Length: 221
Image (cartoon, rainbow, N blue to C red; front, side):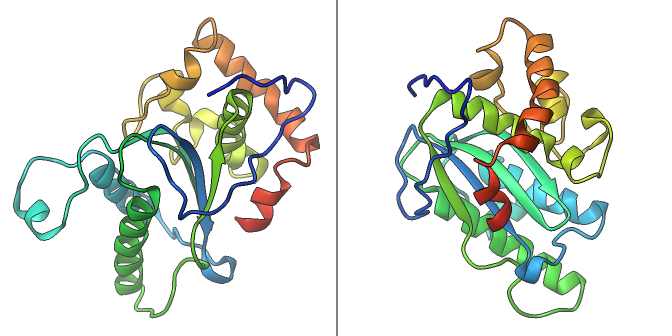
């Protein structure tokens, strides 16, 4: 990934064709509920989504459950950061092998939709069409994107402190604690220390609120 001079302008990557995937590429993947409905109603829902994401990213050894569910090859993807919001989700993923991100997300969303529909006695599509995917090819944009994803709960008014919002990878990046294993070093190692990265996120809120380059994400998600 090359470095870009984006100090004054954050440039979004415009490739949203989720069918085009390649090893070593970074992707911002997001989707929202059909008709903007909530896809997470309570803690159990968030936990189930994370459980399925974890299962597909890091397949466990064979047991009763894995015999019934086809696993993806180990180490197919690296999860850099994520955020689950009441009516949408964001994932920042690196594709490591030949298994496409579409296979990962389709398995994840299909499994979660079945769980959600059964739990709430509903039928039909849970998500709004195919997921959106942006190929992130600029390193500076990658860093700003991590801020955007982590700032989602605050900009939506769900929390005043990012560390108090459980359903994101913010704490994993800052303290190393979280509900699913991420690989934040791809981003955090670009800073002198964790405190510098934390400050970068904290200071980004004012910038992101003024920038229009992320509006395409808000419109889609």
